[in-house]
Image (cartoon, rainbow, N blue to C red; front, side, top):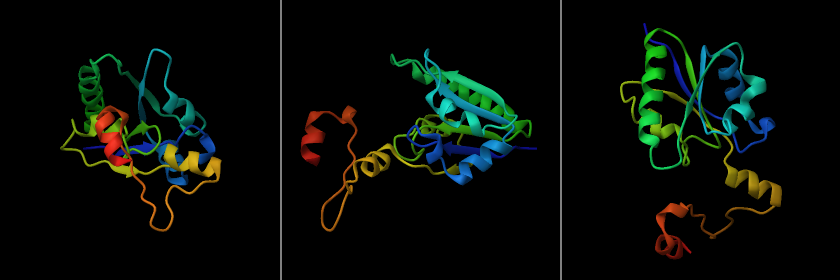
Length: 157
């Protein structure tokens, strides 16, 4: 027997910006997995009010180039819960499909097909707060990670 696997986007930081689907999934999950640092988990803090009776499965992701081992261990733990028939909701800040850390876990579980619960991106939340459209008419919208380097950023501009 195999449990249901969900990747739940929790939005940019305001719990009221979580989707109804995210709240529904978190209320029903057997296990909620999430990345954390030594300071805790921003994703778990955002979702805290909506997590039901789920067991918590935090995993620490070092920000010093050693993240692969943490993602390997987290994927193994998630896979064990799924294999035991437990449903797992993996939290992701912002939207899981836009630079979401969840991709580092799902890539390690190619035999599992998660249901992706999309969320509000930080870019959308910032634009809404500022009252400025991200793109309008023929104006382009481009997302370039800072890690791509100055040349890529300059090229996009």
